[in-house]
Each structure stands twice: as structure tokens, then as C-alpha cells.
Image (cartoon, rainbow, N blue to C red; front, side, top):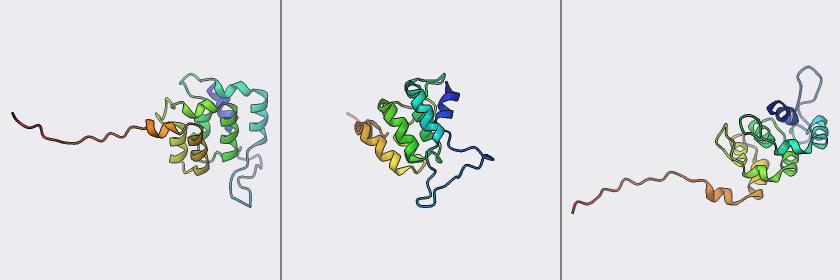
Length: 132
């Protein structure tokens, strides 16, 4: 299943003449095979692989994945935005942010804004206990 998830979000194949960038905005266009793959196997995005990842985890894991591909995967299974990636231990919006995918980060947060409140920072204070 992880191979299918990776195939669903694959963007280019070196040596086959696929263009890496569009001229107008320098983003990689969504591949035709991603659209066809998701149309043919719409339930793939909700299935977990052997390590517990869903397709969205693979999509946001690569900096090169275009926003349109992430958006298509997210629309196919919106609940994936709230699933913690068992490999990176990050929510999809966090991983997208780590990869400087600003549009994806914002869209993922809009699906479940409460995730921001659920992120716990470890703020410990070193207060001395008073002796009685």
C-alpha cells in the first residue's frame, strides 16, 4: 500500500521529458497520472499502509509536491489533515510548513484549526520549592 501511496503523489520521472516547472509561477503542475490514479482509486487516500501513513503524509513529505496535488489528496480524504504521521510524528500542516509549502500549510490548518491549540509546547519553569 505504501508503494501505491507514493505513486499517487509522484510528480515526475527523470528521463521521460516531463517538465519540472510551469513558466508563470515556477510550481510543478499536478501530474495527469495523479488525477487519473485518484479518480480510479478514490479510497486509496483513506487507507493506512504498513507503517500507518496515509497518502497525504506522502504528499506533504516531499517539498516538490505541488499544492494542487496536496489539495486533490486532501479533498479526497479531508480527515487526513487531522491524522498524525507515525513516521515524522507531525501533523500534515506541520510537515508542509517544514517544507515551506505555505499554501498547503494554510489549507491543512483550515480543515482543523483546533490542531494548533493541540500542539503542546514544553514550557517548564524552574521554580524553587520553599522550605517549610
